[in-house]
Amino acid sequence: MLVLNAAQTEDLLDPDDLRGAVASAMAELSAGTASVPPRIAARVDDVGGMLLAMPAYLPDVLGGGGGLAAKLVSLFPLNAATGRPTHQAVIVVFDVTTGEPTALMDGTVITAARTAAGSALSVELLARQESKILAILGTGVQARWHAHAVVRVRPFDHVRVAGRDIGRTQTLARQLNDMLDADVRPSPTYEHACRGADVICAATHSPSPVVRREDVAPGTHITSVGYNISGRELDSRIVADATVVVESRAAALAAPPAGSNDIRFAIEEGLITAGHIHAEIGELVAGTSWPGVGVGHHSVQVSRHCGPGRGRGRPGSGCRPSSRRGCRRGPLKGVQHGGAQRTLDRSTRPPLRRTRSARSRARCSRAW
Image 1: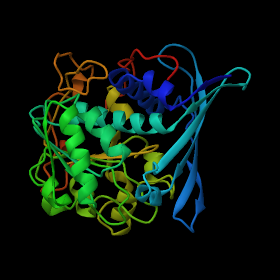
Image 2 (image 1 turned 135 degrees about the vertical axis):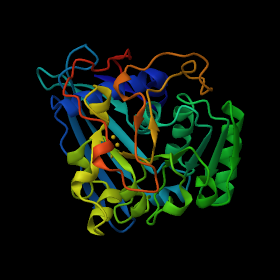
Image 3 (image 1 turned 30 degrees about the horizontal axis):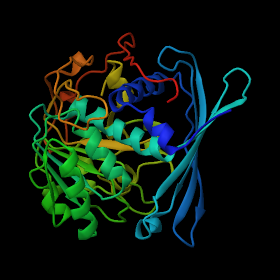
Image 4 (image 1 turned 90 degrees about the vertical axis):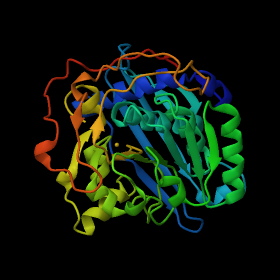
């Protein structure tokens, strides 16, 4: 059995190839060819922790045959005060023919990298091309990975970092400023970071919304990946006014711990129905539509102008995109979406094209 520790696993991850691999997997999920049941969890209520199990089977992994794996990930929020990761995980890979375990690898890095890649994919496909200001909400591992992943798909000039602890916020901002080709500064509050931002990436464990409707301008693209079993990151009014894109409708609408609390709260408050979800990311990748929870995360965009994203930096550089490449999601170019000040009328949404021939493929190390 192949065994990979955290450093070995991270060395095999290329951020641009990873984003392409996530796109391919999302297309398989939306096409109905993947088997990805809702995640389940064992709760450790004494410390507010949980252990989640997430198995999956893909019949075609980047044209190289099927993939069968399971991830066990622990979520222990109190670790943030001790310096330990709040998310820790392992992944076991199995032979698709015999079921024999073939690899055991650290899943903590993959969890952070994969989640950030999914958010970056949504930004690449949906955020305005002229986006210049990025807000990162949170100061943990997810926040750091999101900053590195998202700046690869848009030429941001400014990055704002906000968190509950001003010391951690300043430290992360200083570290990112040394590594990214952008002016990175700490924000005193979540509200300050959100106001005027073109893209907002929320990666917190907050029990109450950190992104509020009054702080979000029309055209803002929002991704929300933080999880609190009894809380949410987004104000329900944002969800109601937004074009909502999810990774999986079934997962987003499932009961905790699988579902999206942001969507569930908005439904329970009577602001939306399940039909408010516009599309899945995989539908957009495959050219059949366009919206993310995860099967781990979800993304919401309050956008007027959407188009195919372009640009990538050198793998591992974390830099502003230095070269241009066309995105293979042409059907979305010029699509007009409802602004943040009103609920999107369904008649203005792009029609769902029921073809899967344009499914995105990408190159990626088989070790991933």
